[in-house]
Length: 211
Image: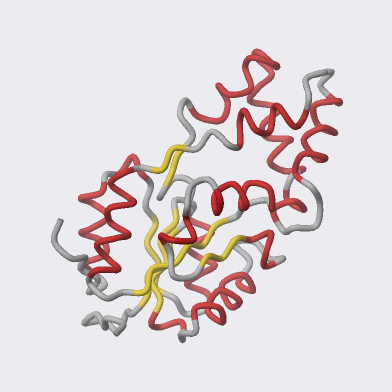
């Protein structure tokens, strides 16, 4: 039976990077081996170039190879991708919160912008399919946050009206996109601390089971 908060929330939709997991050392440091002081500029270009891959329209490694070529980096794109994008650390406190929310009777779902390759890694190697009720990977949906169409599709997959879903993301425009379709939204990052997240959830009547 799905729980119902005092505010009518029955489901929690969580972002991955910055909410559920993180990349140790950050993104910029990951590329310093190959790009040195150019790592920051490279990252800006890479994140812009990979948007089609995030929507499932292109292969992420192919896009990475093209950007590496422009910077004169001869390393294998496959090796770079695995070294950087597959180095993910789920945060124990976030995983515990997911389990406690589910124990309290809430539907708990994953809503994340990922390429098909990284989505497969998260499903198969990190076991996220067993952790969440519904997983909404952008590349599989063909839509990406903050596009309101992404959230409408997520609602279809969850099988709930927007007023019953609370979305948590570390990127404010993504939270705005969720609110645009009628979801409640929380802007939160791992660095804000899980005590703060639980306070924000409680403001929406969402209280996890005791630890």
